[in-house]
Length: 279
Image (cartoon, rainbow, N blue to C red; front, top):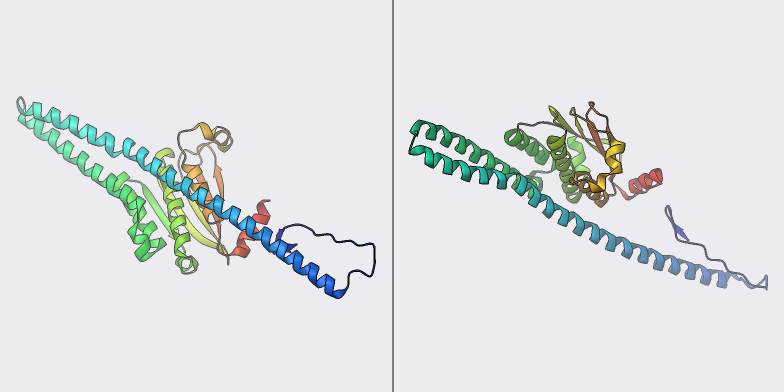
């Protein structure tokens, strides 16, 4: 009992009478076998659906936790700093008006940078441009906001023909993987440049690559203790890649930068092909 590359089992029928299996009985047994296969297929699909729901909930929960961490490490800290510096500037006014004015300029600059950080976080949370103009426009906008907010140089290299064959759901997943990869590189790699590349490597398989020229790391060491690390960026990327049956490969070396490659199937046949290749 099989369909495509999936084998569900084997049904064996035997009888002491060699003439027992007539054409009519064989047809009945074939019907029984097909119905059994359909029942097992439905059970597996239901199990996959439940696992998919759990993965989606985990991704959503991790996104909320990530947002809380980002708010705590970013705008919350700077708002606290603004409050302290305002208090300092207020006390300066009584003694040195010029120094107080200079301090107010610094506070204004800090407030503007905090506003940019919050806008960037809101953009990442729900990039409306993704819904209205598509994946490439969203990635270009993400790169521009990275430059404006963090002075991080991000270069987008995307084949516009891919968008025409990508459904909106997959475009969203690809965008969030790219955004997560770029943020990981910005926070940890200390890279001058980050490249985001999206291209077709086969007619039904595309490749998303996030590459940087930063510090790099020892992949064996990181993978060996990743569960004990506070950063879950790679976990998020793997979880999101699994939503589109994608596979992630990470290449890095100390002093030689990092490359994160996500292989994404565009059809069920391509998914089967990738699954067979990694098993």
